[in-house]
Image 1 (cartoon, one colour):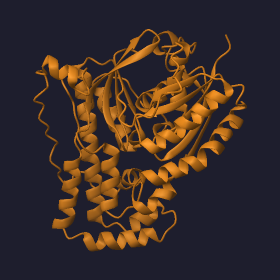
Image 2 (tube, helix red, strand yellow):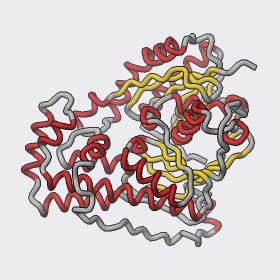
Image 3 (spheres, helix red, strand yellow):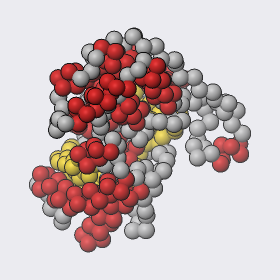
Image 4 (cartoon, rainbow, N blue to C red):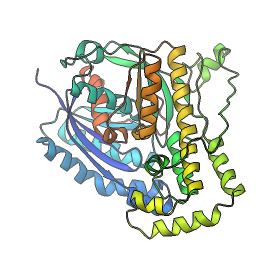
Length: 404
């Protein structure tokens, strides 16, 4: 049987993306239209503006993805689209367009969970590199040769909108997911962006903090460790399990919280009288169209650089320590780290070092596939394509969609 070509469409937040993936393992094209310039003046994503930008970009982005892949609307075998989670209006743009294409072309339509897409970004690239063998790593029988992927897999999906831990197991042609940790408030990427905004570093803040942290002392400012109570850790009643939004989560939990560290940065700024220097930095950087690292360094004093480095160190220590503690608790054989924050250089290095100490293999997607993209959506759709798990035309966006 010839390999199936799936057109993926992603519009869950502020990037309009389309891609063509062959047999769930070969990325033939991957086009992303970023909205950073649109949202930059506001210091964050404005949902209404995001929806409008998706409307402008989706048709040309899909056309470009098909052209780059050497495919046509008629030659693709199926259309996959993000159903959730994400911004309601943004999701609806992608879903409505995907439905129209599927109806007009009489092609199967596949609804994909955005979070599962991030996990499949790791699988997609490892299969392309021959890093996983088809029999063990691929729920759809890939012929790629390579090493064996061992289960269970503990997947950390960490981005601007999500910080989730999933215990993944293989079941027939697909995977099942159990949520064993989530953020109680801010996602890690959101904390990066808010601290960057507070310090006058602009938006998006995560990449800037990552680059600047290497120039500061990560031990200069001591942030208290996050302490979370888990009254339900092993005592969920049967009724609570049935009614909980995460009903399957009745084992030990490894939740995150980043509102506290964000508040600690704010208190530090106030007690150390940093407001004037922050305002001067904000004005100086806003006058530069595309600031370079040298521009940021020119307008950051030693105290600011130390604060940035210490903040990143504390957040990454919490992410890595809890993830690896969960891996020990659940006897995970492999760790995946995906999502926009997975592009952070220090996060990658810390995970690799600490996971190696535990004898755990840890895998990341490349930086382009860490952030939102459509290749991961098309890859995650392939097992559903083989199982003929197609969506009806009546399905709609699920902004709070849960991964199971």
